[in-house]
Image (cartoon, rainbow, N blue to C red; front, side, top):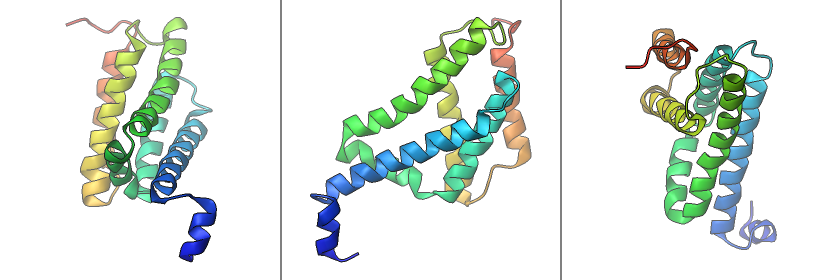
Length: 156
């Protein structure tokens, strides 16, 4: 795109970067919603969502770098990116808790903890190795999630 054309759409580079973050956020949220919409259970949604997140980040490997850079370009936008994902996650967890499908926990804490797990597993395999995590990794993560969310899970 010619420089003059660029400034027809964006007043400056920061505005273009901010639109890129918003667009990636929209695309990720849509991919997660599509992947999990037909899940029969919350645990099915966890598997489908985790796999969709890894697939999305493999296709958009720059996501990690762009979001981390957003912290320094526009901290509010950086926080809003994560908060948007967490809000939807919290809502789904709350619904599953209300239905007795998963045990009663703080949905906000659980959402952020599960997001952190997905983020770091994705970083380790998708970003650093350029591949989807092996099935054993996904299964191990889901085993932790299953044990943690089980309606009759033991409190340690």
